[in-house]
Image (cartoon, rainbow, N blue to C red; front, side, top):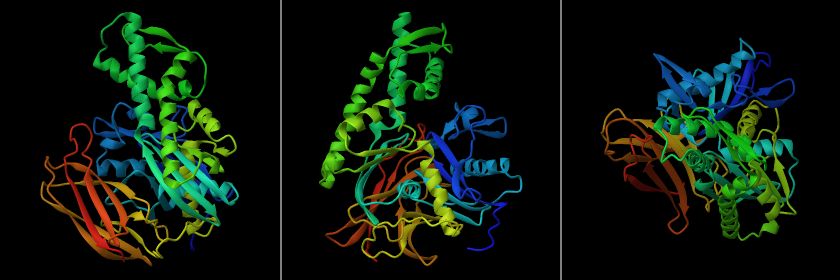
Length: 455
């Protein structure tokens, strides 16, 4: 691509995480992705995916920890949050012009209106592998990717032999950091109430305890040692001991869960533990000590890769995908072509917004593809989603997905879209499921399946 000014034009990648979002940009001097520090003095490079209103103004990041998190964002708020993130590039260069934004993550918008020439959505696993194999020489191997996110542990098993062939995929919400946080919060509340011989704590103290857990979780779970807990936010305050033996007891069920999950995942692909050559661990929970110890026990002969700043790997990969679009770099990466699918399949959200579900030349009939979108429902009437294929930048309608009335007041709705290939009927099966919106609007029983002939 032409007309790219290396002094003022920026390629930006954002990994929208449930807990934290990470922004990276392409450094044209070092020809490498760099993570932008958005900590605001809180010591974390990433920014909390949170917002709250102060009078009539929106506040983002750690200052908004007590406000909304990603699951509760409206489409308008998510767009404002993304806009706020990309504006941070002005801290590097006040004259910065964002030429390309590549978004990856679990929740995307049905419509995207940003003043950026190119806005692209990237598959999170492809983003991670793009960074991994940009920094590591591609070789013949079986590689197991473990992405420890807030909502779940995501496992992807792949075979690499010039191209990357997908062998299996699974998720386990019981190993997501949000679930671990909740269990740690319960334990800390028990330590507090037992020490002071209390029956319970106030709702306000529970809220502060949840924030306390998020602040110290990394410090507690990344080292096998004794810790002191300072409950200065409670009344009365308390200093308590948390021994490494108590930590090991707390982590024991999570270790068992991890072993069982890996066993199931490998069994589904027909592989043994000894067949895995490389493990790549990323995500916010990747640095927990029980993860490292368990993987070393299960895969003694495998090469375990722990990238520096594991939370930032997906954002860095997204940036590299954008830089490759501008021919600034060459990423020697190719995913296995399945069924000769030379187009992408996704949703058309208007405003020239295409949300991919299956990327071009990357369709695996054995895999279930999914994405989560936010839809701003103005009324209780039925609405539609357009399933389209994208070929040579042109969109063609595959199926209009008629969404029946959802039984609750007009409000932002979170929908999960899944797509799989039915080899018996040679058709694509698409399922739309209502996920609700936060705690106030719980999911309904709406779930509808559609089918379309393989194109």
